[in-house]
Length: 472
Image (cartoon, rainbow, N blue to C red; front, side, top):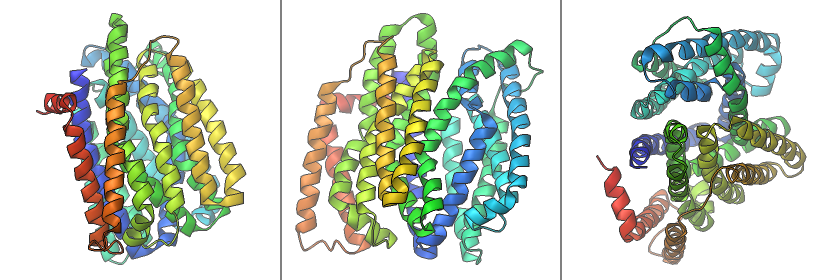
């Protein structure tokens, strides 16, 4: 578990930088462009995400699995080549659909240059996804963490520059395109596997696994983008901007869960092949504790400061209730990062596929039912319900192979510290010496909460030991 913790720490360090920079950039973009223009950008990104998913068809996760099962680069090369070739063929079909329905996409997104930009983003996103999968299969976790950090930093810097040069919302798209080109090129440079003519057997093994992991990709996509796309169709782009901003704000709490989840597939795969079931069970228990460590205090913090965060930082007059519902939903999503990747690691792709098909149907159905009736509030409820259904189903399947538990002492400590933090921050909020309607006041309250929670967690000896164990 220590190696997983260290890899997770490397990813955590990269992702916390990514999330913080992303958090600050959305504040800047919201203030510069307003909710409606920001909604156009988020709608564009949702379309790109859907089409990228259709292009790589679960191949990045299948690449992680198959590459991690091989011991040398020569044996890994056919899988990487096969993944890129299969994705390239599907991308050609996706491009034809984009061109065919170009006018409708322009009208839906409200962006004139949408068609060529969509094709460019899908091509880069598909290639980068598979190359990142190969890097993770080679245990180059820290490299992918560094590339993700570089990608976010370069995207934000370029987007800000384009905004300053007067490009408006299209400047955000240009900044993202250049950033993706840079990180895709670097991923190609760092991957060790190389290329080789794939055998029919290697293609079949890759595709056989990918046809199940595509469910994982679809589930993630619908959880993150289906609500945005439905909102963009039924309500205003301003509502899209507020909802998506709230979603991204809650996403900061998932950096720990994402880091642990991404390190689990190659590690659990090796333990499963050695028959070390007890090791997998211990890792699951610890993984759940790590996954929710940041989400619990975030739920309490949003309950106390949600309205101030949206109004003061972003200039939005509504959305606090949406923000709280989405944050509660991240508790289930954090655990799902663990359950899903453990299922993949123990070679249960069918279970992942079934649970994700269930969550996709629930998410799309609930969004279509609730969004026309209650707008972005309905989208938030749909997201919370979907995440809960998915994690419950995956726990059901995991229990067929593993004896599952959590480190309840550690989880209980997190709950106590988070509640203590919430009460303290609420008391500080009522203290008139801290102006809660200013940026400095809100930042001070958030910082106070972070310090209180951090100190409370480190007060527990076992947690201090774990932190020291993963430090370089």
